[in-house]
Image (cartoon, rainbow, N blue to C red; front, side, top):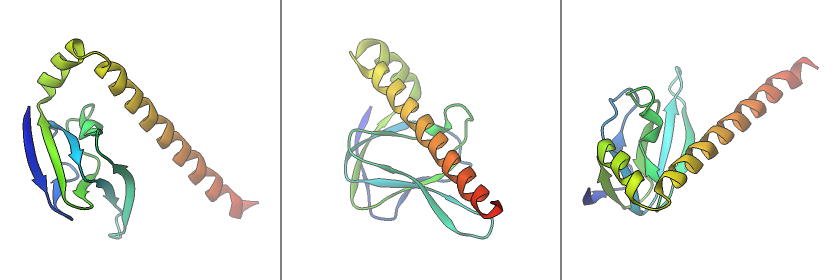
Length: 125
């Protein structure tokens, strides 16, 4: 792990379609993830706070579906994925934390899809 990666407000950590490399743990500060629509509109998809891991959304695809940037001065800890796999077996509670976070992300995405489907159905009524 490498500690002390500083990030300034607005500075990106990764961009849409960049390949997945290391994960980052947020030690201090805050970040946001965004997607950009075809017409250039920015849609915030997540906020990230201290203690959270970022870049996990690209594990299954080997590329990022979003862009993530600092909301203010932020400090990150770089964690290579192979090391994260090893740590999850040695650090008590880490694997459960990762599974819980991924479950929360799935639930949030399902809720957003439900809201969008409801919003699109309302004008048809």
